Length: 529
Ligand code: TNX
Image 1 (cartoon, rainbow, N blue to C red):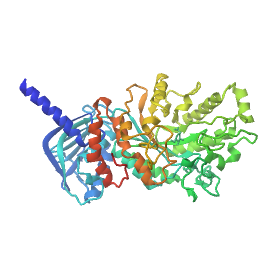
Image 2: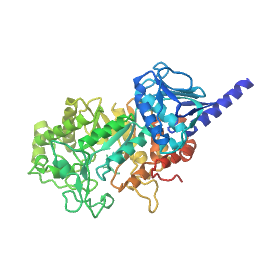
Image 3: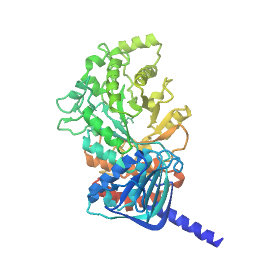
Image 4: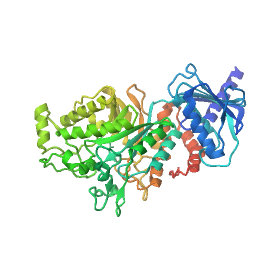
C-alpha cells in the first residue's frame, strides 16, 4: 500500500514536472532519469515517408543552430533518432508518441502532422538555441515519454494584410511561429476595403489600383482615426501568384493549411474602385457607410457581372490554394447598401426576395455554388447565418461576436470555428492603459483572458482561431507585440483539454521557456507582467 502511494506520488510529481517546458501542454508525459545527447554523430532512421516533413524541419534547424545535418541510416541501431509509423500505438489524427532515454529517441505517429509535432516537442525539450543561430553542437535532452494529440483539428490564426500590408518574409515568419506552437490553419485575410493584396491575372487592375492607398490614389485613408494607416505617404503592396505559391508551400512544409479570404459582398471597396463599371449598378443611388465608415463598399448582388467577376477571381484563387476551404467573408454588410439599386430591386422581384437578408442569402447561395463547381467548401463569418441561408452542410462559419453566437450556430448543426472578439481578437488592447496600443471597441484581451476561454466539446465545434486585424498594425513590431504571447494561450486552448490546463502552470512555462525561445527568434512580444 505504502509502496503504491509512493509510486503514485512520484508519478504525479513527474507528470507535473515533465510537461514543465512544453507549450501547448501535452496530454500525458512521464519523465525518466535518463538523458540523450544529440550531436553530429547521431543518425536517424525512418520506416515511413510520412516523417519527411518533420525530418526536414529538424535538419534545417540543426543546420542553422549547429551547422550540421543528421545522416540517415537504414537500420535502427541503438543511439538513433527513430521515426516509426505506428497507427496502432497512435490512434488519434495529428497525435504522436515521443520516447527519449539514453538509448535514443523514438517518435511514433500515424500521419505527417503527428511526426511533425513529435519533432516540435523534441525541439522544445532542447536548449532554446535550437530555434536560432548558435554555436551549440551537442544537445542534451532529458529522458521523457510523451503521449499527445490535439483537442481540436482547427487551430487557426488570421492575419489581415489588407489594412496594412506585410511582405513575404514577415508572412513566413508568422507561419513559422504558428507551426512552432502546433497551430495549423493560417487564415490569410487578403482583401478588404483598404487594399486588394493578391494578383488576379484576369483582373490586373485589382492590384494596380486596388493595392495602392493614400494621398492621390483611389483608396484614400479612412476618416476613422484608428483606421487611417500611415498618413503621409502612399502605401502599396500585393503578393504575386508565384509568391502565393511559395507561401503555401512554406506553410505545407510546416503542416499548415492556408485559408485565403476574399471578403464579400461588404468590405470590397478596393475591388469596386478597381472595376467600377463591372461592379456597380450605374443607376444605383444608394449612399451608405460601413461600420468602419468606408463609403459605398459593397458588391451588387443584382448584377450578372458581379458573378462573372467572382467566378473569375475564385477560379484563380482555387488554383493557388490546395486547402478544401475558401473564406468568402460575409461580415458587416452595411445597412443601406442596395436600397436604391434598380438591379437589386429587379432581382428581388424575380426571386421573391423580401429583405436585405434575403438578398444576402441569395448572393451566398450563388457564390457557394461557384465554390462547389470548383470542388471547394465555404467558410464565412457568422453573419451569413442571418435569415434562412441555403448553405451546404460541409460549409463552416466563424463566430466572432461572442461564444454564444458560436453555440447558436452549433445548435443549428453548423460546423463552427470559435473566434470570439472578447477572447481571440488580438488587435484589441491587452489592457486599458495610456499608451497601450490596440483597438478599444471591445473589451481588453489580456493573456489571462485568452487562456480563460473554455470552449465546450461538441461535434460541430471544429476549433478556435485568433484574429489579427491590421488597422492598427503599423509595423512588424506591433504585429509581433499583439500576437505574442497571446498566441501561446491560443495554442494551448486549441490543443489541450480545459481540465488539464492551469493558468499558473501556463504562465510559468511562458515566462521560463516560451519567452526566452521567442527572444532567440527576435520576436517583439509583449512582456508578461
Ligand atoms: C471587425 S470581425 C471586423 C473587421 C475589423 C475588426 C477590427 C469582422 C468579421 N470584421 O473588419 O478589422 O472588427 O477589430
